[in-house]
Length: 186
Image (cartoon, rainbow, N blue to C red; front, side):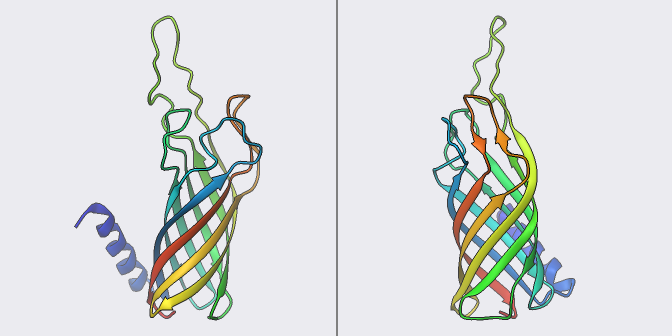
């Protein structure tokens, strides 16, 4: 098995041993918006996503998500976001809403990738990493048995992100659609 399969197996076993009512693993993709777009490598494009959720009962759980811009942008880097959340759900329904409240981290990636520096002209590719409050919403529906489809909206609040005239300004918003699997009670 590759390392991601081992991570998934470890997460499921750890969650089951810690008394989780259910564990969800999901993968999918979407895109990102970055407020007032000014020649940036954050907004647009395809952002694959991996997420894991552990529900302690039918209404309360925890969640972690990772998403990255698939294309190398202007700054020769792959921006990424990572968030950790408390999850709130009402009882199971045909279309179950989910609220995610937590904290998110954003990074444009390595600052020196693709930079052509020399002794006379230093490499000055900007690097931005910030953290902020995360507010997410989702609607989930089970397709067949434990397999579900989920549509998500993510907003990273707090300080507005700013990267000079050549960067971007505004809050990052992500939109995603994921396909997942639930172990335990659906």
